[in-house]
Image 1 (cartoon, rainbow, N blue to C red):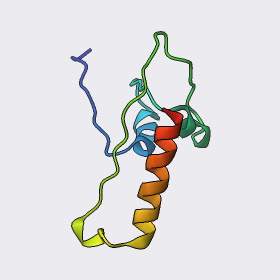
Image 2: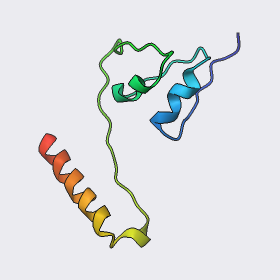
Image 3: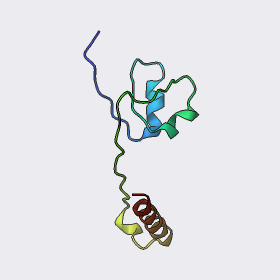
Length: 82
């Protein structure tokens, strides 16, 4: 058996595909797994704190009204929940 090696995925949606047919494990948001058959999920054995989310976009979209609306809506929702 070789040395364990970490795998990095560009987003959470890619991880279940990497897990299928492997002996790897992953810590994922619970909303990701319902779409994937063949995987088993358990609650983590230790408390896991949340993580910060960041909104980012290219400068050329700075005046995009829809993007500004989403940014304001999500920011205010996060502040209200926090």
